[in-house]
Length: 280
Ligand code: X90
Image 1: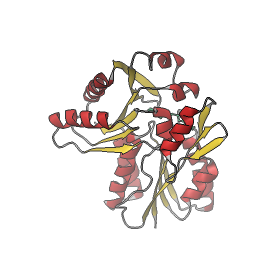
Image 2: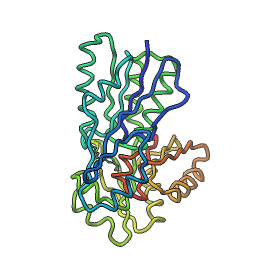
Image 3: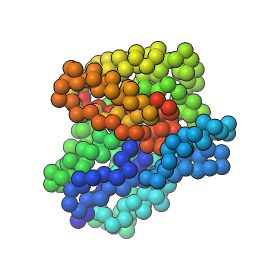
Image 4: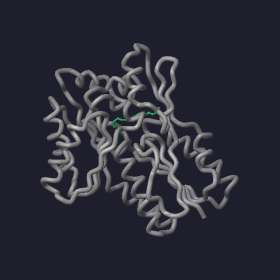
C-alpha cells in the first residue's frame, strides 16, 4: 500500500519534505511558451530567466496544461492517490487528470484516486497539499481523508493582488475591461478565486500600501480568524512583510509561510503579483 500526493505546477512545492511512511510527492508540470521557446515548469526551470525572455519578447506567450499521459505516468506504482490541480474552470489540467485516472483504474482496479479541483491556484493549492500530507501522517483511511480534505477545501480561500494582468487578458482568463483598469495609474487588482474557480475582482487599490490594507480587509471580511496562511509571491517581499505584520498584530499565533511563485503562477501573476491562500 503506497500513497501518493500529486499536484500540478500551480503548486509552489517542487518537492515535499517530512513525508509520512510509504508516501511520495510528485509534481506534474504545465508548460509556458514564448515565441518558439517552451519552458517546462519543473524543478529545473529558471523562472527569472523565463520571465526575462517573456518580457523581452513581443510575440504571444501562452501556457499549456499537462496531458493525460503525463498524469498517467505520475500515478504509476501507487494505489492510494490524491491529485490536486489548478482551477478546472480556467485550465484543462483537472480534466487531463480525470481521464488519466479512468485509464489507470482500468489496469489497476484496486487503486483509489481522489481528484481535487482546487478552483484556485498558488497558495490555496499549497494549503491543500500540506493538509493532505498531515492527514496521511495521521494514519487515516483513504475514505476518511477524502471526507476531511473536502471539508478543508470549504475552509480555505484565495486572495490575489496583481499589478499586471497582460498575460491573463491575452490568454482569455480575465476580461479586457478589468485588464484596462489595472496597470493604469499604479492600480493593483485585489481579487479572490470565486466559488466557480474564476478570478473575481474585489477592489482596485492605488499603490502598494493600499493593496496590503485592501487584501487584509478582504481576508477579515471573508472570515479569517488566525488560521494558516500561505503567500505565493513573485518578487514581493515587501507585501509579505507588511501583511504578515498586520496579521500577527491581530492574530499573534498565525502560521504564515511565504514561497516564490511557481513558473506558471509567475507567468500569470507577473512581477509583484501574489496569491495568498488562507484558512477561514
Ligand atoms: O491550462 C493552462 O494553460 C493554465 C491556465 C491557467 C490560467 C489561470 C492562471 C491564474 C494564475 C492568477 C491569480 C489568481 C487566480 C485565481 C484562480 C481562480 C494566477
